[in-house]
Image (cartoon, rainbow, N blue to C red):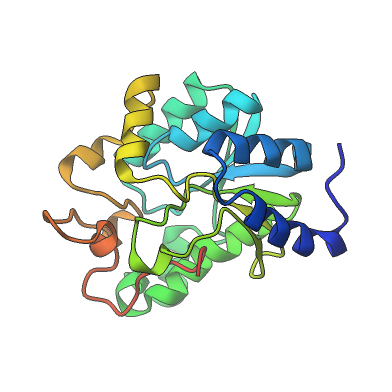
Length: 232
């Protein structure tokens, strides 16, 4: 199956965003697979395996893109390994051009402290842009309840930054919906979640959050930064 022509994809995304806004996550995934076939992939940060599991029930063998930044918690790498070993998906590790050691040599160590935007650009945004080039659409786990900056997340939209259709089947879910699904289906959740890490990124830039804090308050704490650049 071939995806719609690039010139039609923006209009397709805008129409689907309206038509599917009230659809279930499963219905959104079925639409994505029917529309894009092998030209759609999943992107997962391995905070949990809910999204890969959900999509693989519709399309076994789906490509799951994982950004291996070189700074992940061991628990995140373990979750990735478990997903690759136990689910009918193909996990694709995407790495930056520079290793951590090479980046340290070129820009001095702990760039994430001095210029987190530059660090995220090199270790996340640029590698993902290259990894998404073969696809016409990508599926993410964004939810509206994660942060005020994500409250308006559409179910389907045109991703201007990466030049493809972006699909967020879990947009209308709450955290209770997510972990309820995980419990019902026996889906793995990153062990750090139970320790208060409600939004998991690179280890140097992530902390646990306190009761009542925004789930993303633990990302880049103390920095003037709330997104890595993949979704904003």
